[in-house]
Image (cartoon, rainbow, N blue to C red; front, side, top):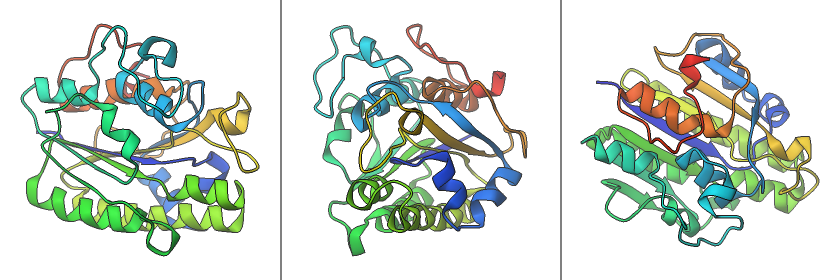
Length: 257
């Protein structure tokens, strides 16, 4: 039975991942697949991009165009609803309240909300809680959201020393997770958007291009996947789990690319 962990490093740029100083980034590219040219959606801000990631449609279809949630005019089932509908279990670990609306109530079996920033960043605390919970409950699909990189970009600037340090910290935790859970889980590590100067949300390349890293036996080790969209995340998870997709979804599993 296949299982998947999806991790978002909020605001991570491809050049930021490569320049963060953590050797595990390039090791992960060798051990699994990767894309350094994945395209996100407009507006390139956190809630709209996550809604597109989870529902495989552009913001114009799911209707979320700011970081404030509004009910969908035409409701589309996302990956949480799809996994639960297939009789499997789900989990979510995060530290930003607005993500609570990524799915309808009743579709998350396990999870934790950790508010506040430990030493300026709660990412390692979230990873520690996720590791403990996932090891105990073994959900079929788990989502982990890491906010620290985006906060570093806004506070100090994208590609600043502090920003790169946040990415480094995130990959320290991810390395630990994969070493602990990599025999049981496939991993998809992605950003939601990039950024430039101390902002994001534009059509600039720095905002719209994100990296993704893939680990697990269904991915081709060392392969650079091309023509990838953030809309492909939900179909890829469904493909790994061997469950159906939703007819409204616009993306394609990267396993078919």
